[in-house]
Structure formats: C-alpha cells, structure tokens
Image (cartoon, rainbow, N blue to C red; front, top):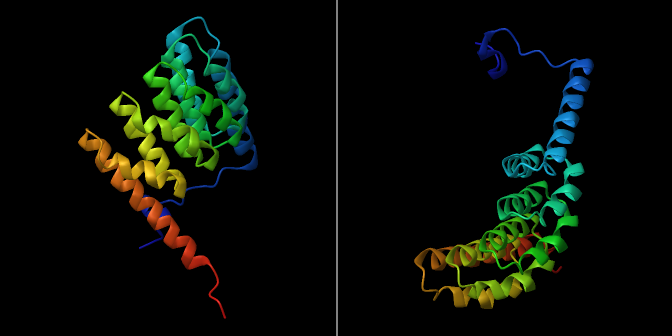
Length: 197
C-alpha cells in the first residue's frame, strides 16, 4: 500500500529538496522579506498595509525592527497590522512598543497591540492591559480579555472576574474562557512540580 508520503502522489516518493534547491528557496525568501520591508516605507498606503500583514506570515526576525517603526505609520491600517505581525513573529523586542501602542486613541491600534501582546505571552503586558478591560470599545475589551487569558498570569484574575459582569455577552464569554485558561495553566504547573518526599 505504501507510506502516507507515497500515497499522496501515487507511488512516486516526494523527493527531498537538494541543498542547492534549499539555498535557492532561502535566497528567494530573503529577497521577498527585503521587498516587503521596502514596501513598508512606500508612499502607497495599500502597499504598506499589505507588507505589514505579509511580514507576520514570513516568520523572519529581520522584520521586527521595521514593523516596530510601522507602529508609527500615519495610517492605522498599517499600524494595527504591524502590531499583529509583531505578535506572530514572537520576538520579545516588540513587547515595550506594543505596550506603548495600547495608549493610542485609535481603537484598532489598541486591538492590534493587545492581540500582539497576547501572542507574545509576556507577563510585562499584564499590568498595562488591565485598565483596557474597562475600554469604551467592546472589541478592545474582548481582545484584551483573550490576551490576558493567553498570558495566563494570576494578576489578571480579579479584572477578568469583573469582566464576567461586562455589558456585552461576547466579552463575558471570553472572560470565562480566559479564567478557565489561567486555571488550567495553574494546574499544569502544579502537576509539573515535584512532589514533596
């Protein structure tokens, strides 16, 4: 019957890329990332926001500093996508700039920054996120609740418990999930601790 690798393509095994092919793929990726980074500074807004979004999917740390700069783009379309991409890249250099972005007057940048901070899972973000549980915009509150649940720090429990009484049902539901996540993480940690002998 053949292995799962050969079944997908008839009986021909999928060839592994040669070292030369791998090197060529890496070179193409480098050029693509370089191109996106250049587009982040393009006068055309459409190119900038597309580049900000694409860089998060590339998974390359060379994009971190240019994306941090893009948090100050004149258009929020670019800013909030840059914030989300910074979260996807998982580089902790983005924590402080994203915390700063939480102070924005624009709800979309607050949403993007909260989402990014949730992905980064840094406990440094907990205290700056907590006041946004009372944000006027429901989508900001919901994103902050999700982020706090993902970070899973005990300091968020009191605020998330208050969010169970939020006027919006989706925020209340997200708060319950976040509290469950924190409880689950706590139990995992407890299970990993060596028992007293």
